[in-house]
Image 1 (tube, rainbow, N blue to C red):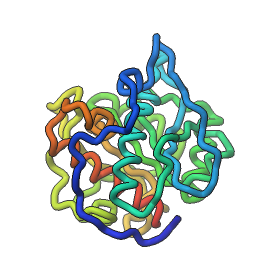
Image 2: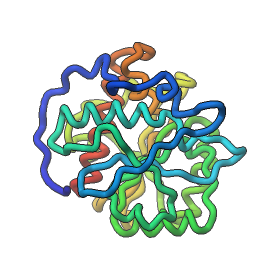
Image 3: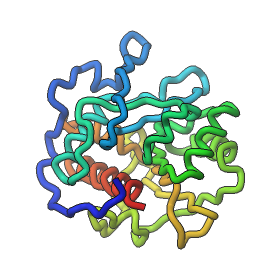
Image 4: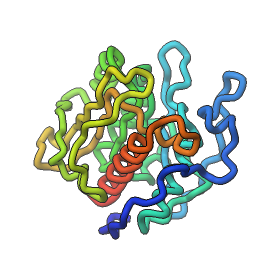
Length: 252
């Protein structure tokens, strides 16, 4: 799976919505307060979107927000843009200490402002990252940073979290971005998006292990991309970032 990807022009992102997506799915997979979790896709070597399930503060189901519509929409776009050939109608949910997580190179973590890893979860995620896993952190803003950083320190006690700018290779792995300005967290547009990372051996010249979308929620922009809730440029920027993250994680 670690290969060079053919670059193509970004077209037709507006109005993208996975075929057959239900209204319940578009509301984040929540039905009557419960999370409607679909069966995981059996491993066959093809790319499968992986979302991490974790212990929540206050009983929130934030790890599942935007599920599964975001995954379906993103995989549909990814399939059109790249040669990755992802599973389109299925995705996986794994706990951080699930041994099966080791089969997958990239994982997505939603709402880390309410993340409270227990020792087994922290150890499992730490091992996965140290063995080459690439973590995408998304959907939190403002004071939620305090809890996220506390939780991240449990997983990687010695890690340095550093700001990234548009010159970093992750922002040019598929689409070459000229700026990181524009996006904000959809729940509070007063918070402008920031992008931070954790590097292997805390060395910025080495591989990026964790990409952190702070004051941002690309998952929400992608979930609602077929509903006209957000400006077209916000939706397009979210897909560009997500595609760059995935290609970077699979090719390095």
